[in-house]
Amino acid sequence: MFTLQNLRSILSALPDPTFVLTRSGRYASVFGGKDHRHYHDGSGLIGKSMFDVLIEEKAAWFASEIATALATRALHIIEYSLSGSDVKGLQSEGPDEPIWFEGRVQALDFPVDGEDAVVWVASNITDKNATQQKLRHMSETDALTGLYNRRKLIETLDDRLGEFSRDRVPTAVLIFDLDNFKRINDESGHHAGDDVLVEIANICRQNLRKTDLVARLGGDEFVVVMPGTQQADALVIAERLRDRVPITLRQTLRQESTISAGLSEFWLPDRSSDDVLKRADAGLYMSKRTGRNRISSL
Image (cartoon, rainbow, N blue to C red; front, side, top):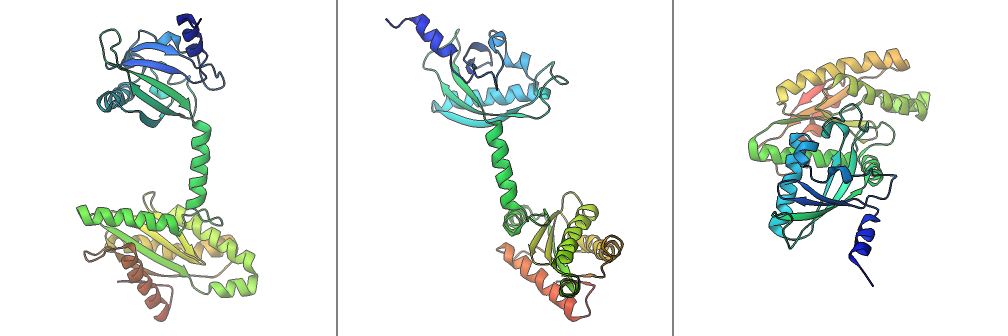
């Protein structure tokens, strides 16, 4: 005969922790969590409020997700992280890296201790999240230089164009390539050419701002996206980069090369990221035609 004790035993044996949480954020019951690779005993939480256990901001987030599940009455699925700094008293004792969870939250059809309540199943997805982040990083970066690739560049430009169209937030775009790069490949070999490209990436990281996005468009062509920057201010940054490249290449690789570049920014008629890229590219070719080692603005 199936008994209430059997049901409690089944619930307690669940590998993922399952919480019954009231609207006010009280832990009414805790079941499962038997996969000890990922979870600790949560029975000590019963009767406590998440506002007593978690920092205010995190507890308020959980409370809002509970309210959403209660309002919709449908299965509510979210991903979230918890770190030692989120738990009161664990700031120096918790895990070094955030632990990621998938929460599956369902409103209950009956009150618990006089309150609306949900059942919240928390599944540790830290390994899955790390794999997804690694795959995303690989899909967005250039294998040789570690800079972003064309896919990430276009995604970023589309986002910036959206902000410009809505709020007139400026974004400047610089396209540059190496002068006489073919000569380096022909005289010193393609390995030397690759070394130069890697060094260019390092120069960009060291001399551009943290808010700037740098991408390798292909070959020896690079693009710098400068959010919140008008063309005149971007020119100062671009000139600093142009001055730095030949000095660093000479010092680190004993290679002689400069860069030519084209600079533009979003204009009101722009409808796609191609518009600003075409203008910057036209500026690059103007720099090539007028002597190289210079920046042309369009």
